[in-house]
Image (cartoon, rainbow, N blue to C red; front, side, top):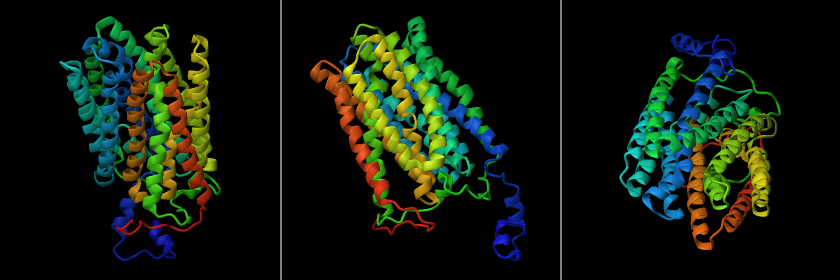
Length: 438
């Protein structure tokens, strides 16, 4: 008997048999199909994440070939983050309407094309535009929309599932930098980027089609565990705050935390080169940073299932701030390796927390759009922070002030999240979308 019939005391509505049969064909949440879909999603995020990390490793080589300063060489990364942010909002809305398969397929094609064209770019302006318009939008299809999609396939383990998908981005960060660094040394940065494009073409398109095996979302028929983060999903806050204001605060918080996060992630390779340790050491630190970030992302999923997304985000933000302070205090080679590992362990759970928070605070029908907005905000923060750190370096001649700038932005994030935690009291009442005026 269908869920609708059970809610009517065992009496199905007239004419509902066909609808009931269709619903019964859908897979159960947290089941075998959900975990299979999760594995496909992680693979897609891992391959699609190449778009975010290749330009970071190639930054010194690109700067040398085009003969520009550090802030100018950071422009492709800035436009890349803007492209991912804009693509995340646009593709999130499209995935709500048309499903994840066409969005993922188109994104993979754009990403592959972007890598090939970036390897053929005759100047920095073309290189930067390709990263913003093609690689950025293509990469966005393999992050925010995938996270929103997988959240519908889990109830009891939603937090850990979202965190595992998000960890694919850090798996990409652990794998791609050393591989790209080696290839750049062997065949040059242009040929390296074109090779990465070929890999994306041969993997992302078949994986996107594989998501179509179960094109519909499963029924939310399993009751969530009481007291868990999943139990708060679809339960809205009663805090005197309009949905538009809550979304705005989350966007500002996302920008702030990722301006701080971008300093080590974007500039660690160049920073090590400036200290005389060489870019290869910096690439190793970036790989370690993101590799250990996988651990914290998965762990944050378990934590979020128990204490909720907001508290999980606050803890991660506070620990990230500690790591940034340590970068300001120590710059020996051994200490930078240790701090990079700590940074990865501390901040890995920050970004997926926003997707969990959205599912806790807003209607499910808005998940793709609102998750896309939050992820877009974090990427705008990465873009702004990547450029701002390069500008501060050009202005001061060192990265010390840039780390201090990251600490200041991190404090802003913590203040916003603490305010939301203090205001929100979760009650079993649904907060409908605000009127148009909101």
